[in-house]
Image 1 (cartoon, rainbow, N blue to C red):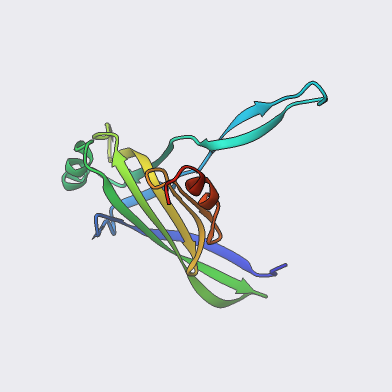
Image 2: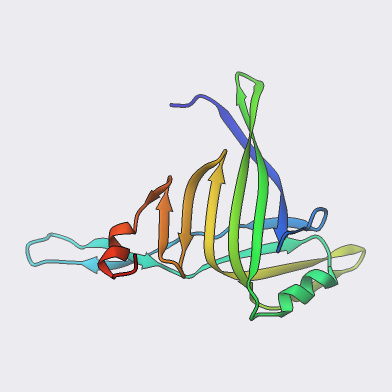
Length: 173
């Protein structure tokens, strides 16, 4: 087991190749959540849940203020956005920083509309956009952690294609 301590904080978000440096306050990446069915049999003392696919993926970004160019992009609910999130992971061993590794997320998403603004006395406005996600790939230090693409029937874990036989059985290869 690895005895290192890893920290991950701060990131830069790119929308269609354009940096949002100094604009993004927080991002919640998609969660590939399986859809499951109950399997039961007369001989079984209980039920088991079996995965049948995935639920719709969503994500959100919280902006540190109102940016009209960003919200104009968010207003077009018919145009997908190619998003990239780039972060840094510090790797520590025995209180020494021994390495820095890149963390990258590649996302194809569709905005769910212009965000409502929260405006407070003597405080910056809060703006949060939600997105419907059709493709998500997460990499750590160049290694594919997960890649899921609903439109292409791709589901890879650790670089292993989990749906190769499924696509072949459906005649999609």
